[in-house]
Image (tube, rainbow over all chains, first blue to last red):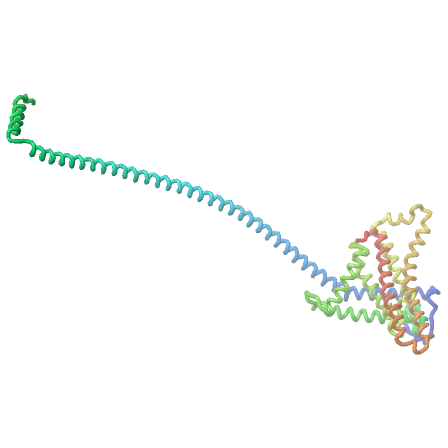
Length: 181
Length: 230
């Protein structure tokens, strides 16, 4: 292999397409192939590796994010389901409470009514008793008054003779009565 | 600026003379720049953070953008070709844009370079066709009838020739235009004004032709492998 320097020498023009063109073409091809191999090794493949690695990492992160999203969605669904159950339970509890309150209210009203009836009955009884007592008192008072009046009248109307006659009649009545066991 | 390809030396390998032309030198310069860039990336890549910033962001965006481009052009099935086409793309791009530097002759303005790249595409077309479609791909050369075999073969051979000449022609045209300007225009016109032409011929046409070459290569391979575009 020897290199000879030839100043200002011009080789056949490209359109000549002689053997020299073929040799130059092969030389050019070797140069470009060498460049391709070096660029692939030094630039293209390492950069691709970095890009692929990053893409894989991002894809992994996206996949993870999707999984987490799916899990979050599932949790949300569960939560919503629970909330629905809680809502139902709340409705049930409220319904039950309303029912109990209604029953208690009715019971209390009924008891109050019964109590009121009882109070009223007792009051009526008391009134009746008071009434009877008052009647009895009045009767006694009337008797007393009548007795006093009768006494006064008798005192004023009866004399010694009338008194004796009455006494005799009473004694004779007593004598005419038969003793009975 | 010279439109001819100068020879700076001869490398004799087993009796085969390899000329150290402007194209080879320019290729080495582009290779040197790209390898230096790749070495910096390789050194730094182990220290890269989870959240990319600055230089890391640029490199990651470059690779990712290119991957998406391959995916959209050739589909997931041919993603393993990403490394090769990444090199082809970045090499052609830097070669074309390099034309803005005085004295730099874009390697893509030499047909021996563009045809070398196109031959790889041609080989990949045939290999992917046979790999994914097997006998059906071979049979496609005989369709619609066996008589069409020569036409189909010519059509197949026309692809690498077509894409190699497209890139080579565009870049050589830009080089010729700029050479004419620098050699013929009055001295006063050789400043500032050429910058606009460099932007058009080297940057605009350079980026566009890079994109076209790689897109066509990927489309041909995807077509042979019958990979539906997404």
